[in-house]
Length: 264
Image (cartoon, rainbow, N blue to C red; front, top):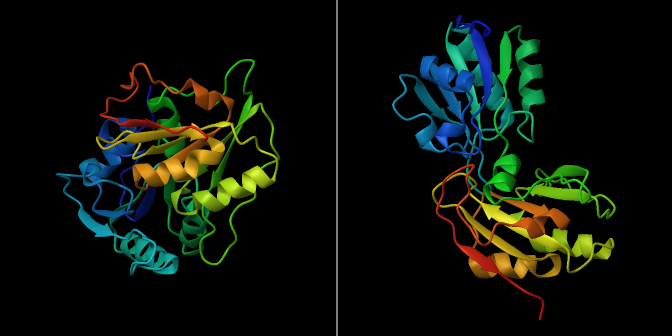
């Protein structure tokens, strides 16, 4: 039995839109998007996810180097619309609890006395790994994974990678712009230069592409392929499982260009 969907006004739903393919929306997310009065949409959510809805669309996404609303302004809009009696959906790419400022928005809503509900979404790191046939964990090879943001943002330094462990898969989100610096730091910290690595761009979308290379060569390979953001980077022994003989994933259909680089 499914839980009844609470569609009362004066409430905010913080909804994960998944990696971009509308078929990867959860059933609850799709229902809320269809019934919302207002959709506050992040930059990484493609229009296919909300096309044809009856809601008013407000684009509040942040793009590096471009004008955008501040986080405080977004929170103020959420509170104002809810208090106007609107059914408000805050639509975020991936999962709202993974580097998507869920905590900040929840604190703002609770501070204003506005009811809220969070709806999980398929994170891009899960979609990227499965689309190219890479298991994040694999018996006897990787028994854990760690997910890091690949950019500092708002004056913060880049994240510190964990100490190298052959049984750990490292996942970097939003890392393409700083990939050279991140890889250099990993090599300085003792990560093997030949460690398998893969970058996947636009996971689950028609323009999805992947680049495979030893860790040391990955920044050069990504630059040569002109890989675009958003992209996910997977580092670890499991990355050698990249599906090369059959580039079409059974998890999500897509058209993909496969490039490889080797150390010279």
